[in-house]
Length: 401
Image (cartoon, rainbow, N blue to C red; front, side, top):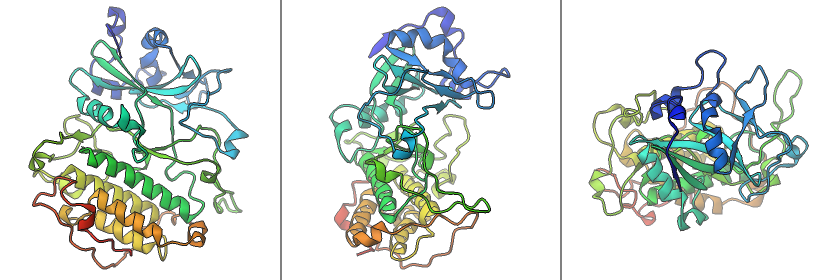
């Protein structure tokens, strides 16, 4: 860890608070969030990190590139696909000043993020340290983007991550095996967090990354009339790994804490004075304390339903689990560990042929379909349902076997 004071001339040009960092970059006209990092370029260069700069494309001034002649070195984190090898263009959209891409002296691509400033962001930093550093970062069931480095500059703590890309549902899945793999990995990752008493509270597709190097993707063939045809293989070209990202709203609890104290209230952004850009979990609208782990279950179930509720038998059996995850009553939702067990058991019932079958795209612009299914068994839990460890995996039988 590097701890360096900020020169006075630099300090005066930087945003004063973490909130200011999030909001900076678009004023005055003609500036971009990347400009906020310009005074810090010499400092990060001393740390062996060269910040990416604009590609100078007038229509997308926020598009950053590593510079010509600096192809990404293999780093063990990312892979390419056959279609991207033909178009290996690398770039990153810096639309928020909170982060900036960079390259190391040996041309590894990384993302630097300001995680904490003063007393702001300490929960975020605590979650990353607990989940993304040390021996736990090597666990196969850990799907958190690992911390490569922590750099302290004055009252600011920057974290360096490997540069990954989005891709949970883009391009769309080629077969059912890919769908099940994505569902399993993301659920496994959140179960890992909950086991270590970290709740995310900001779950959606844009906070799920994949180990893709970047470049062109095969989104499918456009048919006459502009309709997208069936997708072509993409995830089959490399061992896809899904990562959970952005623990800015996370809450952490100590393992010796009283389970009844593992609660929050209100919207996760209430202390940030910002808009909560997610679908609101029902209990977030109440002033009463609620379990953040059960809120995570609701958000993940809703995301899965939005992506996969159109799938037919036998996948409606999995949809039943997603519906239970989005129950209005928190205690009726399974824990993340129980949901993972259900998915694992469902996977064991499928044949290779069913996994290799082509998966249809979600119907465009159609509302969620109505599904009536038998309720799952009641989970064994305490009155508050606050501790993800209170109900073991054996307390709840899978509805899909």
